[in-house]
Length: 119
Image (spheres, rainbow, N blue to C red):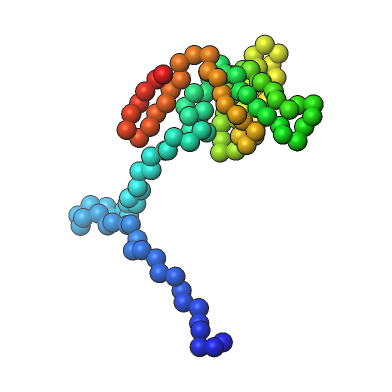
């Protein structure tokens, strides 16, 4: 083993606080507030229900090199966007890596940690 050994990792002290004596003793957990950053999926998520045109490119496809999806934003995640076309009731699951840009048909909400703005 060459004198090397595995050390257990050290962890910060717990975040539990006891309530003062005289009250019922219940452990409380302090949870840090995490503010979202302005990633594309967060901006899309803030604008659920809005009409959009999503411009998408599929570089490996000759039939679908460039495509435009029109509809309403239903959901957005780290790697996908779901759009529903209300005219023909089709739903589209679009991978974010293929998304070039999004055109909004109405004012958008852009919330950042220091501002709440609508553009």
